[in-house]
Image (cartoon, rainbow, N blue to C red; front, top):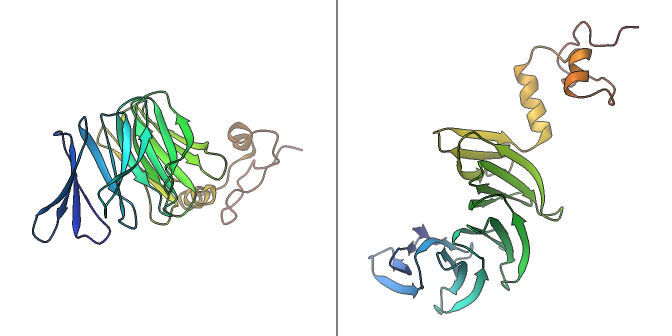
Length: 238
């Protein structure tokens, strides 16, 4: 179940093949949208004027909350598990059992891009600050895609257990993930933040031999953490 942005209408999804709108104040039914199969997910647009529904019909549907008319159909080739609106209201993302996540124009319903995976895609999340989207699939991988770079995969988190969910932090700098073994993790998305965190936990910089092993011989040695001392053996022997 999901509340609209003004918290006065509740949307529900059901195995009775309906998605329904309810008035929060008194619990009265406003409208039920009939589907052919089970409805798994409902989401309101950020202005509250559109309801997206997703389920077993191999499609997500967009409904006008004011007129109760269906306005768009977003098609997949398998069950649609999740549907979300981007924070700027420009995009919709859907995930499916057909091993894909898809991006759509939220205003027109026009298909934009397919993000291919190696297994069923369960969840999707938009970064509230940066132009990024994260997907969770049953291959135990959470992927981050950069919208401005042509929907290129820019990060991948692999786990030993199945990934269930993911969310960006409000400032867009971290990504939280949850896996079936009961572990939640926080990942830094910014290289600068990752280096800063690492430097706060270390007592020295890399030695020259460590630099060659972990960074490579093509890049000249430098202090990664300016505030930490340069250890003995940091420079190659003369």
